Image (tube, rainbow over all chains, first blue to last red):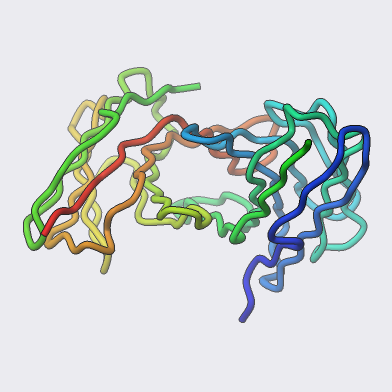
Length: 116
Length: 113
């Protein structure tokens, strides 16, 4: 069981370039998330999705786009990369909250992005 | 949304219990308390969660005060591998969108030999 898989693990971008961070999960989770983590800081939510075809903004969505065409995949697109987007990006997934389940969020291993 | 307050860092001797406090004085009645940890360069890992009652699993125990304004995560026999940043989080529900978690700064736990 692979869980949440992110690619690439490391990437260096030049200012103005674009790229897509891939994320896939094999747990049939409805909910998926993208977080970013700057050095020494907590995680901030970029975008989330409650199911295929449905996405919504989190706390820091500017400069990013997402899509959710399937339950398994939730790619994060960076358009016109800027140095402020240098960060570690974490994809995550979970079941919907329900009752006492309190559902667990499962995180990927992270993608280290540097914009120079 | 309820906010949490945690000490920025703590030390613990290997083999001893690590007690990590968290203040969440503005928690609402239907909000859960979650604990996650993040070992260096890895994705966050779920530890435990609770609503009102104390909870225990194979990793840790969670003690929630009766008024729910604070909680303590207990690692009963800390090992060097428990060195990590520990996040206390109160669940945020937005527009029926499920279980978004808001991460603060956490407590950096250093387990020393």
